[in-house]
Length: 274
Image 1 (spheres, rainbow, N blue to C red):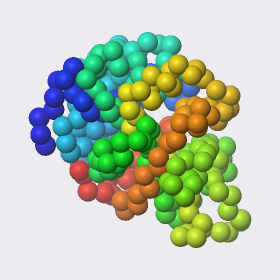
Image 2: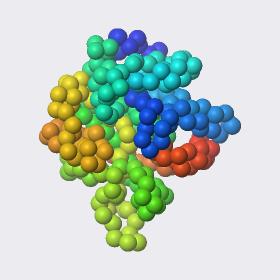
Image 3: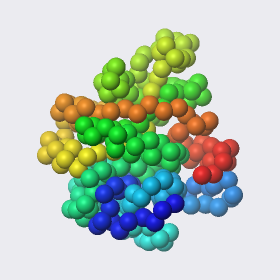
Image 4: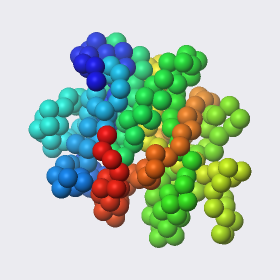
């Protein structure tokens, strides 16, 4: 792994937006999660390690508004930026870092509850943006395996939000994101090549100008109803490229609820560590 540049000099920055006061899971970034070696780290610690494992020379920083989180980041030797408590979502929190990152032209949002995100997915997203200069925003989705689809369906049956799905056009641009499972599958039908279900991962790359425009637009009705920040781009007519990748042999589950912690610990135990 190459040496990371100083924040003020970095042209590509991986930002982990993190807040303490999750309505569904208060204190989630500091939740203890046990690894396969029996060592416990906090959720934000696991996510930071995942960001550091990304190949390349991108800088890595945690963006937060809570001193309990900055204390934790100091404890494992990471970098952090303090951002306003008023940030309404992770994209706004990433945008709030722009003044502290004067040379950053590409900013990656690596969500703090997505510790199972493969580092190679982040590399693929950065490579996509570097190869497509016209792309203003990009994100990642994976084709759901039967196991991941069953997890989503079980969460939905129990009234929990287990993940976000996305449908795309023939240019691999997002048509819509939803916390419902899209497209609708008849009872007993499992996703396949003819009718895939794309699980959207909490991973984005933005040009600097796209973030500035996002903040200037202000919140929209759809993002408020769905609770999905990325819908603001679609409402404004800003295309969101979707890089579709294959699962890596394990379900990429986010920690959205307390019930996800033992599931994630089981996946960590079952897979080879990066």
